[in-house]
Amino acid sequence: MISTTAATAVATALLVVGIWIYNGLVKDRNQVRNAWSDIDVQLRRRHDLVPQLVNAVKAYADYEKATLTAVTELRARSEAVERVSEKATLEEAIETGIRKLVAVAEGYPELKADANFRQLQDSLLDVEDHLQYARRFYNGAVRMLNTRIESFPHLLLARPLRFIPAEFFQAATDERAAPTVELG
Image 1 (tube, rainbow, N blue to C red):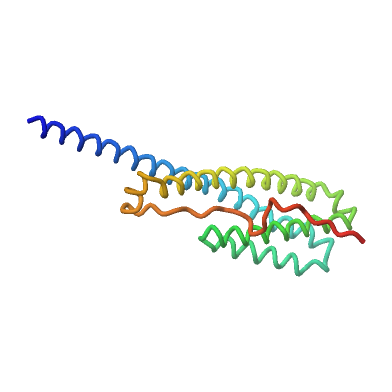
Image 2 (cartoon, one colour):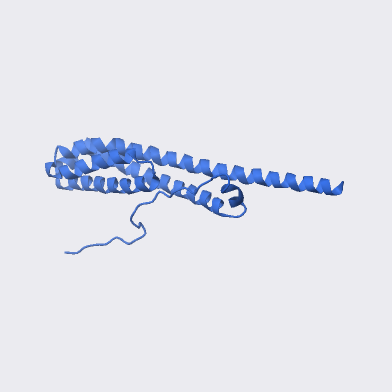
């Protein structure tokens, strides 16, 4: 009688621990999905601003047509991509293209003075700030999920239940590297 009671208690404890581990994994996976949703919202905001920026700059800088076309094409490609790593690479290229377009404004005082262009610049700055925060939150959620999936005892349930590690959303270049300054 004691051995059946002990076996039942151990089985119940293992079941409770298994449920607790599974619920933690589901919570972390849902946190990653929610965090990706935040990034997706900011990327859509950025993508919505691209045509407006292209049109504003197009009126002043005909020689920048290659950059304008490239940014527009990158935007379309990014919207079609599903993998996080591919999207990160394309979004980095879009960000570089946007910076080029905004830099063009420096050579056109009438464009810099245009209220619509200034509003676009402010909106882009706001989106980039929000995107940076969303990316940090997402990467933190990914780190938490991946750590659980790879840690004991969670890995005992994660692998058979097909919990897979999530991809980080990071720029292709190393953001920690010091910027280079070219003189002369």
